[in-house]
Length: 418
Image (cartoon, rainbow, N blue to C red; front, side, top):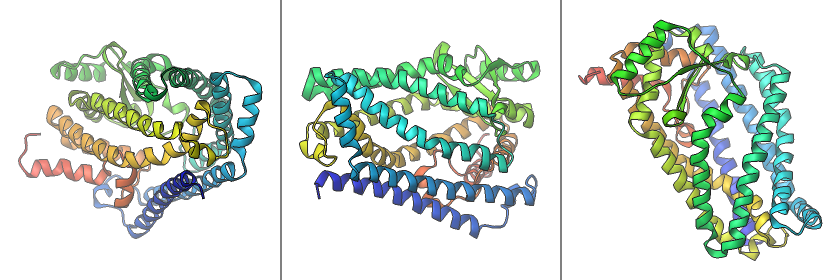
């Protein structure tokens, strides 16, 4: 067997094995922890709690099935010479590597997107509907797909064109220039996404509750955190789940509160949730995450450099060496490598969450309200209250809810100023 094909298959199976093991252990943890945690007995109805456990397990089984399906699909693509036929097809269409690359990658992208539609449809209109979360209409579902495809074509097409051009022009140093170009592209999207992309999917409306906005603006002023506007997002058009987010920098900054969140939480609880997001900003987590992402991009391009000019890599797929096909084929390696790297990045993210929690309770001095807000978010979204530790290490960007609550309570017991 070709060494590179062995490496590709090994990485694909490692990713699949770890994901599946994490999911199985998660189900085991749910089954072993049938009693509701004491922290939630004052808020959680036992029937609703059991329903949430069923919801989590059904989603886990669904994910295992989906992961298995797409792993088999990738293996069929490799061993049934799909890439060979595709490469032969695009070479007959044009002599331009850029045009070939756009068509080659575009066909692979839409092949997976189209095959993913039944899974997405089932998850939205069967699982989410069954447990009372779905509010998405078929029209919205289709429009979201079309919008995301258009954005992928524009953003992905522009970036791929730049990357192929750089590799054709700079050869051996191309990976460095691609790193710079992709990093600049990502920074650009961080600034424009809040004002150009997000409004394509949701309406951003000013919050009319003056008492709440005054509470938030006064808090922001005390923390020297400039806010131009706070938006209510019409998230209820798609789901009953609640959330809040903070994206962008400077005048491009946007703070969004789901309309479902505004209906189910008190003003004090909403303030502590917002304070948590302000904590991320004050602790420069967004900047740190951006630098980590840029480093990750550079590392992956450096690895890519060792494959793009290697004939054995292309022979693993039985295709002729080319810059344009290398990007699409390398994505098979990119996914498991990025998955393994994400374990480290998620550990950093969980640390950041604790720091933001600490900032929130110290600056609002409302630990009980913050704990109550976290509990409500977990209940409303059917979060897993007892995830297996391996699953947490593997993919959780936030600490489990009970660990966050215990962390907040420990600060009070240790005499910290909160």
